Amino acid sequence: MAGHAGLHLWGIDHRLAPTEVRERAHIDPARVGGLLGALAREPGFVSAVPVSTCNRTEIYVETLPEFAPHECLTRSLAAAGLDPALFTGEYGVRLTDGEAVRRLYRVSAGLESMMLGEPQISGQLKDAYRLAKEHHELGPVLMRAFQGAFRAGKRVRTETKIGEGAVSVAFAAVELARKFFADLPRHRALLVGAGETGALAARHFLQQGIGGLIVVNRSPERALALADDLNGGKGELVRARPWEDLPAALADVDVVLSTTGSLEPVILPEMVRTAMRRRRGRPLYVLDIAVPRDVHPDVARVDETYVFGLDDLDEIVQANLAARRKQLPAAERIIDEELAEFRAWVGEMDLRPSVAEFRAYLEDLKEKQVGYVRRKQSDEVAAAVDASLQQFIKKVLGRSMESLKSAESEQERLQHLATLHRLFAPPAPSAPRDPQEPHDRP
Image (cartoon, rainbow, N blue to C red; front, side, top):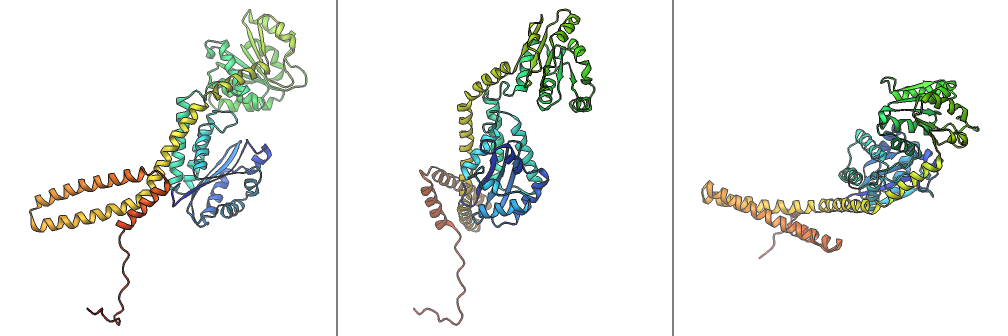
């Protein structure tokens, strides 16, 4: 990491911290401004990006050498109404410089997610980045790190298959339904239950283009609320029906997803037989992801009715997770490539001040020489000398940068930099001579 700046990460995530700890560590968007304002009062603070999702809260901070991470972050978190002990205790993750950047790149690529390869984290990172930029200007190292992380995440998703295949039960149910029907928009689905899992599955169905969706729930208010939310004010693709309409609704759809978790089965054999008579031979696919089961075991005996339970869906999920894990080596190679580019950029950032001094020294010599030629020769000759010396400076600077970059160790590179600085840095102004001091005698 650059000698003039550093990166620090303080975080909490699903790998170490239970849900209740992650909830307490969550940084609401309304508190981001307060945290950044508190950090801005600390000596050596440059900028920060707080990232907070349901599975993680991480604060990425760019600093100068005088920044004292433990004291400054502890004070700032407390000032923003957060408990610093969550981040410094047994559940906290604290990384610096290269390890902090590697963590950021892996998070962006979905490699640190609870569901390996999930794509939502990329959008959440971008939202956090934009929010931080609304409150303050980001430092160059932190900005470059996040831009590199976005690029790394995109490459992992496009150059590997780590995001393919359902790895949640809700999405697996929809993926299974897609195998039943060649043309999903020509079919309709029934959601029995309006809980979180059902709502997630309903959204997946809509994303995959289902032709219509019916929601049935014991609480009609919840069914209506979910239908309104899923429609988003655009038409009535999703409709709520009373609980009493469940037997009739079975005849009007091609796939059923049941998620109520009732203590007793809610979809019974006779109910399905009646629906099948009205269906005139059209098959019905029933996906039961409730615990306990919503579908009576004898429903599977009804002709043209196909029942799939949690075990079937979990088998799909595990197979897809195994396939994603096989993509990890390729994803890690991409992360390593992007990190190498970031390190090279940081290394060049270290070189710029000394190289700039070297350039200024050479440019000053050039101007003096061209001025001398101009006094003795024509403007055309002076212009030719100027162009020739400019090419000379370009070659000298290029060779110098190559030498610095090819140093075999950090210590060797720093020695080269120190030599360049000693040779070409502008001399310090000499102290004025005391007028009372006698002149040196010959």
